[in-house]
Length: 355
Image (cartoon, rainbow, N blue to C red; front, side, top):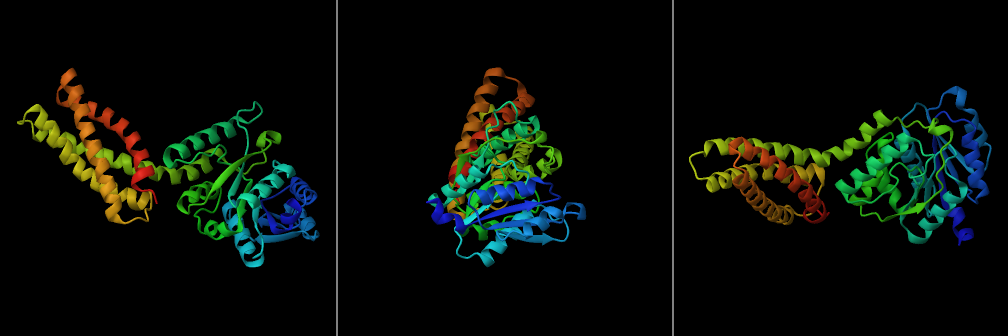
């Protein structure tokens, strides 16, 4: 099988100011059987041009150059566009980091699985090992958790640079937002948007010099990465604040009503306003839904009514039991709706805005 597909798979290597490790990677993938390698010089300075010149001398290599540094995301998209234009008969590409942390056999395995399944293949490391640098372990575990909660995507290695991508998915990958490290996370999120199938393949976990050669900056680049995730949370939090403020106002204005009527009127009035805002924000800004507004609105308000009645019932039950007064009712409301938000968010993602 490998002999039949190896010449139709392009290896992509984006690189900034490389050392001798870049050519170690190149020779490794050539020995593994790859014969088509695209290297992107992402604006490296003159002191680091030797590896690119050495690569140019090899018949298996094509070197593309950015005159200035544009970021890893742009480097990948430059290579994807080049492949779409110049390798129309290829099966797909394998993106590889130039720091020699991806073993040739793992690169070959990911490419082979991709050619067999026609799915995107992610080469995933084991972050439970003792020699994994703390910043890499923490950053990956946190991002993996957010992916699973916010997107319903189970990805064990969100930072992996080893990705085998079928040719048919390269055009959508060129449309994904992001120019630097955030692009790789946006790429994962795009699998959901474009209904792209993916799977994970275990690879050897290698960290050289405690990962000091990485251009990934945990604080700066994590802010860029999580920026795309925060949109999922902002709409819910802002609508929750609107709901709580309106509930407090209405709860104070309807003090002449009985306890049940006061809580019911305050809950319904606040929820009508906040839900309309939340629906529109989620449909456009968060989930970018492609379904009809009628269908999604019906589903959304079925969920909204159930959530509203649940909120009313729990707030009334707890407030009636504890008898904390108006301020206590608001505090109970905050706790109840926080729990319901976590549940509601998952239902919206999985049922209301499925496309």
